[in-house]
Image 1 (spheres, rainbow, N blue to C red):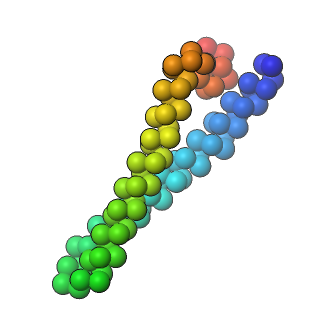
Image 2: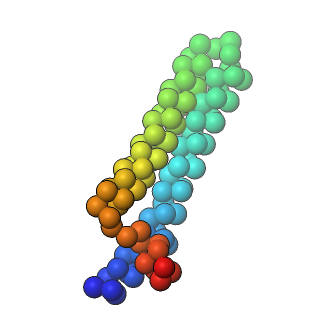
Length: 91
């Protein structure tokens, strides 16, 4: 069982956490692109609409990503499950 916990800990640290970080960065870039489009093309209503949609979907992506991360942490704390990173470091 210890080997499985170590394996899952390594998967989380080396695969899942970077993927979450990459998705959060992508959602933030979409949000910033929408703000840029909204401001630069203030006179063009269609470009403003595209910018507004990009802002909306960027925010939705960030809420989903950080909400899932928060739910996972609440579940770990509620059921007194050890944090995988703590078990890898031996703490």
